[in-house]
Length: 358
Image: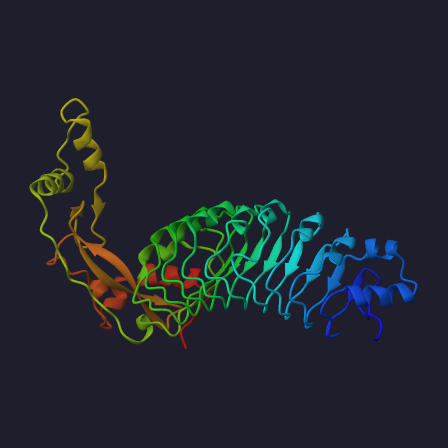
């Protein structure tokens, strides 16, 4: 067997595409070539992709100063406890193997990983160990069998890049909004039917990939993502057909009274109403129709509001009216409605630099 090729520098040991089933034989070859044990401590990147390993060999622990380990494109079904000895490891690439939620050591959450790529494996859920990696900046689990995203995702407080495309995910947890540095969120090729309005709180978000899902609308709060540069929506029902839900539950007597007080500006003091009623009145939402001065609390009409993006695309965003009779001009698809929403549309166009629908 030919010796390793360190084409990228003295700190890189490239053992890719050598047909290895384990490291033992190759390390013997290295010894014959007078590569001392101390040499292994100088290696910062160990590349073992495109081999035939079934388990991660314990010999990797001898490379105690590893910063990057690439074990992609093998037949790995298990990562042993010895990987925990790589205390300086920051990047672990293990894509295109046979790993699942039972393949990782229980104490893996104690590692200081910053990049973890487990795409193209057999995960049906994200292991709890991964949710403990608070130093993680990049997590890739695309092309697995995930059915959901755990609420504990907000434990990954350093996360900047999250790739979960090509799974069976049906919903987006609101807890994603608690990730302060999340900039790139890829959820394409899943079964997602709606986007939680809380996602608009991820102010650092620059790219949101949602193409090839089951979306029929977007929440109007999406316009609050002022740093968003790319929004990918192609292959969703909202691109080819727009839906409108006119389901309306008549307001209760409490709500009718509350609407009257708020819309007519009836004054009241803290000593005139019980605390629960004062809190209720504080929850009033103003009707988005600029020609309506009404408010609503619990009973409203859910409709689609069409907003121009970049002057070319009209996207359906969810909004709420105070009554069925309050027909907002923004709800119409006619040309005349565009002037009524010109200010908001132009603001959206400035915020969105690239909308991918085609």
